[in-house]
Image 1 (cartoon, one colour):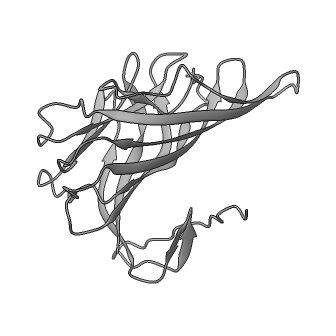
Image 2: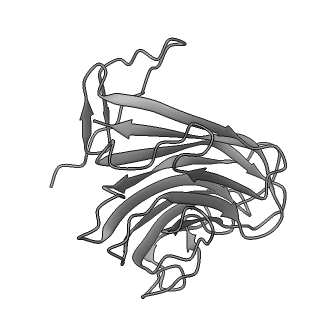
Length: 212
């Protein structure tokens, strides 16, 4: 099976998009639309709520893409997490089932791993979904990656997501995390919230795009 290719997404200050390939999405000029950027500054949460602060998260697009750019946690050994809302952000507790695996390699080359993580998957749970494991908070550390959410406004089927995130783990491991799952509800997902397991998100940004 051929792996999906990935290229840099280029967006100028007037919103023009160049042709790109990102994950499984082939985006020609104009088909990837910037919606909202949230910049962390000692933030407990970063939330995207449809209809609030210029956020669009409805049937305008069948797919939405969240990108993480050097999110830096306040505390050491934390997990980046996501949850979904079906009531306009009043509660982030949507029922989810998911799968989670990761690869890692230490700077010194002393240890490496490729494994499925049962402690990070969910089975009909309303808890936050982990997207990383034990992220470091050194000054040169951070979290970058993306999450794709498919057809969140659908009221017939479940809502699928796929996430791929790179971070620096405690003890200087390069960590690549793969998470996928679905919100098991026929209600529309109309808000998405990102947080960390302890402390705040010091810096970095999350951008939301709509895919035509």
